[in-house]
Length: 374
Image 1 (tube, helix red, strand yellow):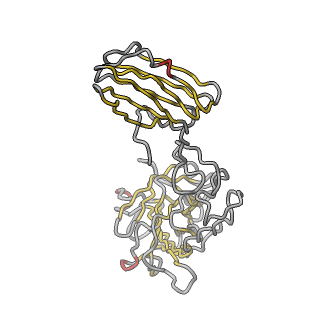
Image 2: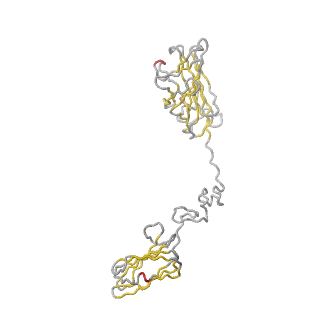
Image 3: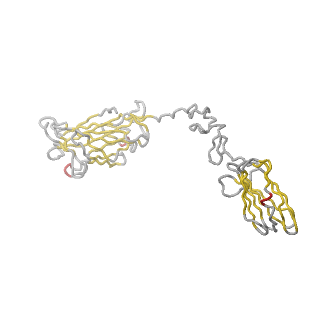
């Protein structure tokens, strides 16, 4: 990542001590990006006769520094004057700084963990605080402390710190104070101030154009209802009951009807009814016929027969002929075959009258019979 250009503005009460500050924020960002690398650096810029002096960096609020603000950064600003973010430039929350920062190896604060926190909500000012009861020092032999951290692009800025440049420019400001010996309002201390306006917010990238045929199944998106699944397209086999529209007709596939029909004959003698004939027409191989008898006159509770081969006419009369059923008795006949919608016919016996016939359908995967579709 290229470094931004920082304006270095050291201030000093006397020529011997001088403090400097530089920083780097990402050059171009997009809203929503996270974990982008950034850093600030504190410099001991002392000149003779104190070139060899070790400077201390003030912490926020400590008595030794007369209530100095410590190492602070305003990560997003839309108006900077003389290295300071103005009240009109306040634009907090555009760039947010990671909760911790780390002193870079090979610099005066190597390995030091800094805690960051927002100390001024109007500007979004962030304080970089070293561990409690410690202070960063900058000896002449290692005069720079570089602090690494990351930033997130939380939202779009409300203004542009440099309208003449392409894109929307986001500015940053930072400051800290150094001293050696005893901190004084008159001598032996200096402030380092930096201002940066090098972060450009780029417009969001346009979405990529749609594929001509993303799943390469020969069907374009305008007719392919799922262009990332090659098994789904118009004309594909639509497996019934899986709640997936594989053939793009707008509904799940349906099971075919079993195609067989039941016919029967009966005879009435007094108050009893005897079924003299029960025939399954257009019987298909692997069809199961299950008959359950309830009520007066039943000679069995249930019977089952498997039709092993296809027949135009399968005679099932022997399964029911022996019973002489009294009024209210029921004969429930279920005809099923794997992968098809079966038939359940219930015959309720009445005295001296034709039995009441009720037909329901047996859909694979459903535990109860349901009304048959017209």
